Image (cartoon, rainbow, N blue to C red):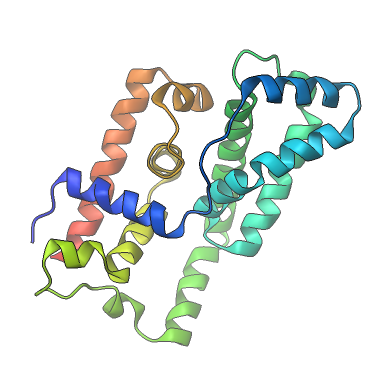
Length: 219
């Protein structure tokens, strides 16, 4: 079965709808600016309000990088701690949410590299296989199924998640920000400190890598 890029992106959207913890965006720049000003004046309750507002989004980004709830919780706390400690460096040139996502992305990428060096993902994969049987075999879709059946099945969602998880950090971060978190190209360019054209081309390359990984599973 041959999948075109549009179908691959539909699969990513399906994964988002099924497993993402992010709710609808309610970002209000004016509200954030007021809360940040209060934080700068020593109002810890104002920062708590920011944490409540963005905790699901930050956890979601953290989880996409590390793939483990406990690690994601630790990483999310680290992200908010870093944001609080560096709040005075926030100049207001961009939205607070963009600045926060920049911290989350940088910390997430660093944690991913750290865990990968320690063999965390390899050990985790081996443990899951031992506990649940041959997961690689179970992940293979039914070759007789039509595309609509594949799109609605748990197998293809699992394959998409695994394909994203296997991406290199630079590719993974941009897929997370665009295809999972739904940020604009302008926001992503600011977060990653890249020209918008570079952002688009890197995302295209990342999507093609995902496509190739899925082809191997579905062939």
